[in-house]
Length: 180
Image 1 (cartoon, rainbow, N blue to C red):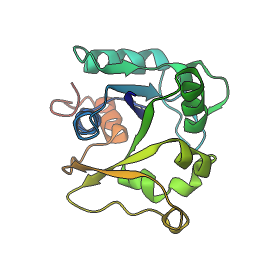
Image 2 (cartoon, rainbow, N blue to C red):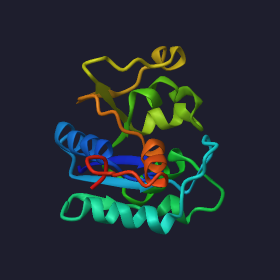
Image 3 (cartoon, rainbow, N blue to C red):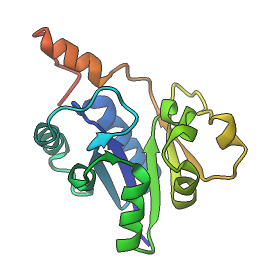
Image 4 (cartoon, rainbow, N blue to C red):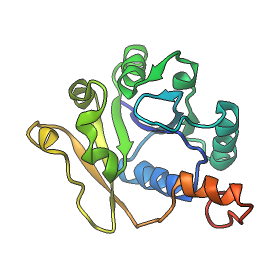
């Protein structure tokens, strides 16, 4: 049985904190493969991500030389809003018998009960949650009341956000130390 990680996001742009979380997840979870999944049209975001072609190109450059990292384009090919559950369900139907890990940050874990069909998603994956600065990830009350599989991923605090990187780029500022 292979251990496969799902790391989704707009990756607009992919930055060093994303890469650090990917490395920690790969090592801590003893993954056989880590799938980086750029979102198509995220249902929960006001800001829609930039051009898919550019986001994929940035991922390709950032992940070059990592043989166990795969860029999965299934959400970019899907019409309408994209949901993690749809992607996981599709993979599990096509590739039965694997163990699946959904890699998320503390903030996402704290509002996981707002995700599309989150209860079904909990049945399908082990949540792998970035624990920054030694702070234990805290689930929302609805999630805390349900049994679910969760793994803590130790991650140092890295103060980076894609929106701040986009703003710096728009102002013509250096992106050294923020992106590959």
